[in-house]
Length: 503
Ligand code: 0RQ
Image 1: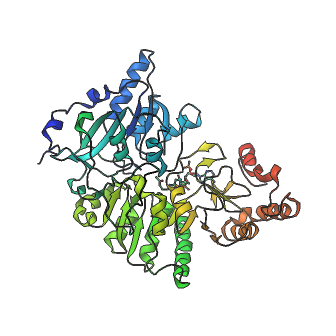
Image 2: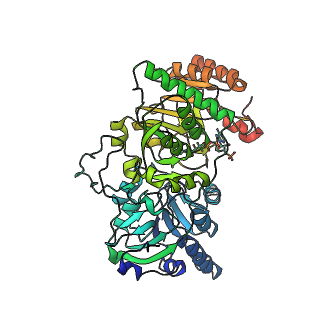
Image 3: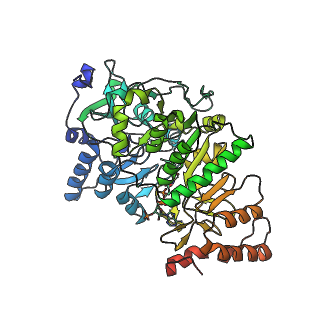
């Protein structure tokens, strides 16, 4: 087979993962590739975790600040968190070990909008990047780098890092070459220009990443799979949520507010968004487009069946089975998928111009439409805001989806006041649970409360919510957004004290 490293100079820099990891020093800021379990480095982070453990065994300090595109995998976040090797982490993670350390207060975590990461690093808000560790699928003869299954912030990492370690992963299909679109037109204010993308499938950049070869200090060959975790079968609750949302989209088409083929879709990851995608396939929609962050199984199916004409993303989150289908039909998918940097896939200017329809999961929503996507009981982080805010604030419509209860019915996802705010009442158009859909557009706060309680709350919590809302409407200091402050968060405290939000 053809050598994936076609550049002779860089072929000479091939070393073991251990040798590459030895180039990373304590206290460094390290920027790695990876987005929702795709395209992350597979070998150097594990070797780095071992190096860190060896230091710790000799009572020597060793931690790094770690930045990525989004969530990675046990071999990256998991291994480094277990080794107690991360001092600061940003911007999005979903690893159980890292999450536990963050919630124990032992790992500093900064949760920012995914579209902000690259520019905030360019602005200098996070200091100098010492090392970039980036997985690619191949190195071209001219030294340019063909990304693998995610692009994330790799352009920024390669541009700004003092030294670069490249992993060339032969497991990634060679046929991804041509799928990427790396935009080099970004500049810093006050010199920014409009981004010349007017349709979700426009190509505005290059198919590979540039990198100054003098900065590449090591190249490591790998051959290992992305995280590729399986999806659970679609359950009844997810299916009902999907049905409500699809009925709403059809209604919007009938009213003439959306075209028959909708507007570019953004879909979060998880079982509910997957059910929505499966539902779209069954409901007769055609010629849809996606302008989203992540392509998961449901979107590959829609592309295969012609329901979706094309999809723009920055990474994948596939089951092992879907990954096989992807690899076997890579020529088909390359014609229909464009992978961009996450500053472009999530760019507010583009999300606004294209009129994306955002569909994301949530932890809880309150009577007035504020949404918490990240913190259980206001303090325990689950994952992070990810790209949900980029799409919620800037899209044509933004829907937040969740079962109406959590933890065996002991928690209501509809609460008097959210215990943490990621999406304000100004950014949320529609809330959907298996009970129904609340269309908040054009409604005053008190009218929103009515439809949220009537359409979305679980019957077990409806009386309690009505009681709160009625008393607040009578006794609140202000009557615009009625609240009883001593009670507003009492449901959360009750759950912490007694194990249920039920009064
Ligand atoms: O926890 O597994 O311990 O039981 O949250 O909940 O219902 O399985 O739903 O996997 O879709 O996750 C908001 C976390 C939903 C996700 C969130 C607990 C529940 C369970 C997971 P257990 P479900 P999902 C694009 C967009 C932010 C990022 C985003 C998310 C766990 O959608 O991270 O939108 N969103 N990115 O028990 C207590 C509640 C709860 C609750 C759920 N009210 N109280 N626990 N849970 N609701 C992708 C990217 O940006 C990269």
